[in-house]
Length: 54
Image: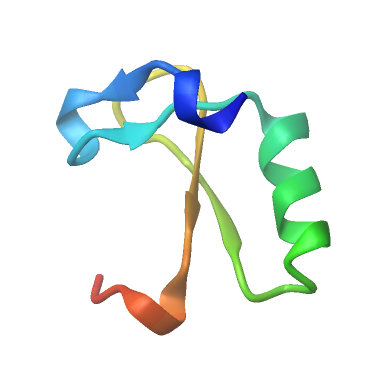
């Protein structure tokens, strides 16, 4: 469950997910969300480019 996922302190507290879960969220969002590999931990983050500045 996304809300219970561990958080990555190095990436602003983003949920740290497995790739399969992130890809499923991207599919369900019809491409509005994007997947990015975490540069600090072994996992993935989900991003909403329309509502975030990089």
